[in-house]
Amino acid sequence: MAKHPVDPALQECDPPPSGKLSRERMLACALEIIDRDGIEKLTMRRLARALNHDPMSLYRYAPNKAALLDGVAETVLDQLAVDPTDADWTAQLRAVARQYRRLVLSHPHVVPLLVTRPLATPLALRPRGTLRPLEAVLTLLTRAGFTDADALHVYRALFALLHGHVLDELREHADNPEENDDLLRLGLHRLPADEFPLLRGLATTLTSYDGAAELERGLDILLTGLNTTLTPTP
Amino acid sequence: MAKHPVDPALQECDPPPSGKLSRERMLACALEIIDRDGIEKLTMRRLARALNHDPMSLYRYAPNKAALLDGVAETVLDQLAVDPTDADWTAQLRAVARQYRRLVLSHPHVVPLLVTRPLATPLALRPRGTLRPLEAVLTLLTRAGFTDADALHVYRALFALLHGHVLDELREHADNPEENDDLLRLGLHRLPADEFPLLRGLATTLTSYDGAAELERGLDILLTGLNTTLTPTP
DNA sequence: TTCGTAGACCTACGGTGTAGACACGAGTCT
DNA sequence: AGACTCGTGTCTACACCGTAGGTCTACGAA
Image 1 (tube, each protein chain N blue to C red):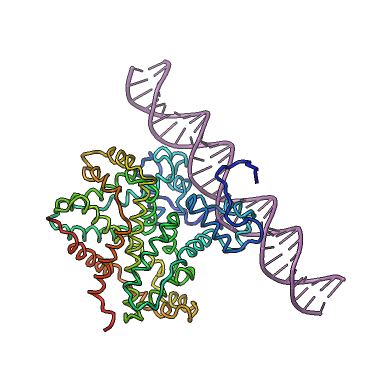
Image 2: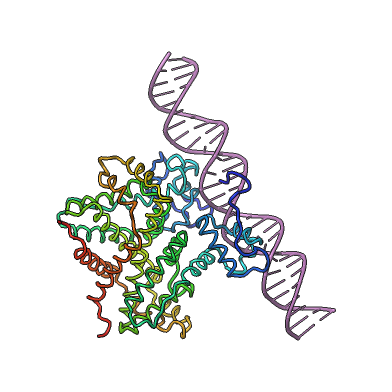
């Protein structure tokens, strides 16, 4: 336990890292590493070391690294609980949205995976855990009286809003690793004043960003907009 | 990984790939490779080969690969022309949105860069070309009577919508590499019928996706929503 | 002329994902 | 009992990656 051969930042995963391997343990550990150090630090070798196994062992549980990353995204997204029996569909969508925001804010480094990986994978081949929320939202909306096509429409609009908002909010977070608005202000003031006059003046405004409120406003706009253009019960 | 020692798909860039190097030539060639083969195929070595130079030469024009990728994203985003003098701010935002959509659809492989890279870079340190559209939109909106803070609000909402929509639309494109809806239908039908009944029925609906119309609807919702909650001239 | 410098090149190092072969224990069938 | 598969883990090896550091060359200024 007390041997420090090399790395200081070489930690292992919560559960005792020896014993039998499993897909769940592998994905959980991978998520831990990503949460701690970011995606590009997740390496087959590092993950194996954290699990106290040979790198090649991982390939018993994932055909390749891309699949492993998909698996991680899946475990995160699978925590999204949609109640398709809720009679108040707008309330349920709001709940899903808030939940999604909280979820990804607790795993910010996973967001690139969530938004990027589906671009490379046809819908039918995506991990099941990824498709489950989609199906749940669809049943919620069809139960509320939407046609299949309109339900799909609403789903798309909702997640477009969510993805867009989350990217906005995380961008904001990247600016404030800690609450050092001096750095932000100084950074902005280094911009040429003739080309970026307005941006330079926004330093204080930028530091006071309320993600939850922002999302709520977005939801208001979206849901009222949907209510006026789409009618659930024809 | 490489099936054969010499790839058949090893092409070079449009302009004569020898002669003096420059940052512009390097970025243009990088963009070409990304457009053709995707991001993960862009390698310092490959790029150098395409430019008929040594890999190390590239480091004269970019401190490292991340900066090079930022440069590519910048060259794409810099093509976004915002007219801050337009008196009709909603019309101008619509124009920007349509332009943005067309732009990224012609460089789909760059989208991960556009949405992902800013998450790792504080705003003040982002490439200038990235900040220019932001400043332009801000001046457009403040000229229209918005306060600085509200202008920022609108900018955020607009680009959240754009990013969200584009991710939606490209996801759809990944499903139809060509217009083979049979593949999609077959793929969907392989899902378990008891767990994904609605999703399986959406094959035909999924193939008829009109991205432009979808974006237009999003803009309608957003802009009317903004008009009711924010007042340009107080 | 000499010198500084910018641009390009070469070598080399430590890292990466993963193919392919092998080791070994637990069942299962004869 | 033996032989057989088979799931699991390990080892070695390969091609490729980003890039630190040094060196060669050509050219403009002194």
